[in-house]
Image (tube, rainbow, N blue to C red; front, side, top):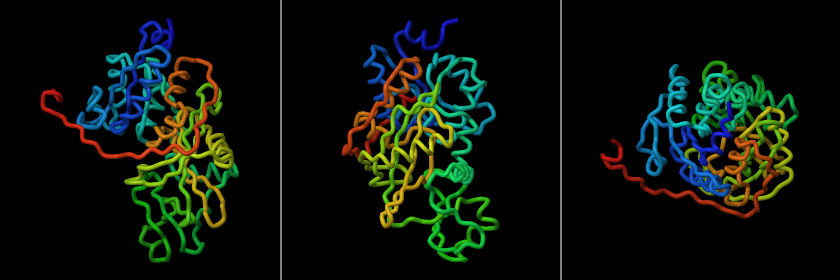
Length: 331
């Protein structure tokens, strides 16, 4: 039986399913451009709870199930077969876990997903477990609070939280008590760095051997709702070193976004968190030359490729634009 990559070559096009990629219109276009650059067509399909999303204004959207639904894998399998999907690309935390489980044993379609193993993803989405992984490997992270330590200058992040939701500043015993019983079991509580630079590093790690093919740091200059609105690429060897150390310690593959923080007072660079998926600001790195969409396609096809790099000083700014849905379009 021919491989799915061979089937794509015969067909002359790649079929990609976005999981939770409702806002990722720019990435969809970049994937199509990457495919066109090697002579392939590219169809994008969304998997969402509602077709009335930005992606649905430009591409077909399958009405999907919630990530926690026990029927999610059977439904994804049916969609992948019906759409002849080649690549599944997740964009939100829960979708990453679903994709990792789906492509590693649950799917009979042979689809490709540029994601880490299910266990590695789970560790990264558990902030306490991730901090333990990095601490044991000697990766620099903010100091973690333990019962009995002073209760000031701290930040408490929900253990399984995302998009900056539920984060609380702790500066007193009263603040700590407000978190409820045994807060260290439900929150990652660390030293708070108030005077800081926030940095995202867009990465792609080859699935087969863990070779880093893209490492592109950028400043998070403006953030809204946990997502970057304005970001600028830059070049920094220390960011690259710490990023690769974190990826190696966590055993990650595929698309990875490493969040770093630099204390402006001391210059110390630390890992804040690691997301085993594409970041929302990744188009900045792509525009700067780190062709992560092209690496995803090349990795799927089994093509040899060299490491790509981004030029510094490229800024992207996100803005609002309306997408209109008429009744006949939703039929």
